[in-house]
Image (cartoon, rainbow over all chains, first blue to last red; front, top):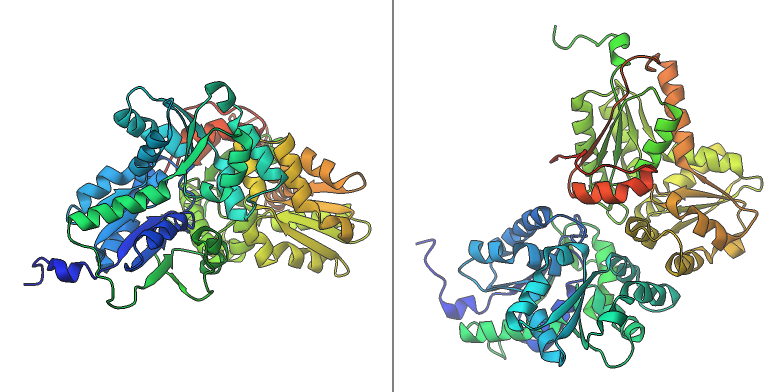
Length: 279
Length: 279
């Protein structure tokens, strides 16, 4: 029968699908590859419609479902929503739609990392406009640690700076100082980078807030959550099999994806290796 | 017969359609309203898919045709493509598709303004990545003034700064200084703001390049070109008729459109007056 369940042994050979609005999610792919070196990955960046961070939750959810359909139809064993904005707007809808595979977002792991890093319970969240407006981090942190006091700041310009490759210098310092001024009064001891673009600005952000503040992002904790989930379901790929493969797909501007993406992946992307798809 | 031509007398009562990728084109609408106070306007900002400036020409052209279809089906007497990126990528295609009405972009008027402002023929163009890559300004200026030497600089971060409302202060000054450094050697005497977001940053840009450089944008010259074209075709609305109306449509985030758009239109936009449409 054509729709009989795939045996777990074969299912485990499938790639892990990673979805993002663009290149920022490559920081999550980088952490996933470090955590799970035997796995294959297929990464889809919806570059034709980025950024998601300034759009409404309704529109972001619609785009996320279209992109996820593409990955799931291609055959994946697990879906990672690397985009904070899409995780905040669409994770329950995605988990309901693809109930047969684990669907993991970055908000919950990021909130967990922040709670673990904070002693005082005063936590700062830097994210996109849409993520801050939706309150997903604040709610996730409150569930884990009801006494926490969260200061969430929307930092739209950081996305443009990261995409432009301006990760240090006067512009980044001035932008960080302007965005982070409210933190002086709030006095957090942990700060979560709630957008996949922000880790490349981590040093400038750390310099702007001064010592004594622990900066965490979702990438490493998300990768750990994916490993845990695959282990539980006996879906980890065995070491020593075929060489793992990383496929990169984008909905627009594949040359730009390769040029800009290397900065986020932490390794150069050869031009010609990114495949253009239409959603 | 249902498809008989509309008499010019009735056609002149129709609104002028203005299309942009988002809120930046409201700087062009502002100039149009000042130049043509008796006219009605219908403005469509494709906020669900902005920004166009980092996307491929092919994708921008596809989006522009969809948006223009919506305006033309609604009944307009003239289409103004306020977005530089869409003008650069799609103007010939739009003019061919809607041959029955004037279709006016902002590149040609902007190039004309730059040529008129320059004595030396050394002209700077600040625009989005897509507009610079396509070379539309450089080509338009070369047609008008073959001896001109054009320095075109892609300034993606300016779009984010304008959208964030950061129009002065340390961040804008540092960004302007960083982008405009190459102009010190090129020594232009005229600079065209080749993106509708940039006029709100005009003062900071002027300060960064120093005195002796004339800064022009497409808005006023585009408005003059529209007046000229309507006058030639006898399509100007007569003064003293019904009160002119301005309709604002957006494909996403109508609250954000109203909040951010006022800065570009130069007048507040009341929440609830922007209509959400789907393309």
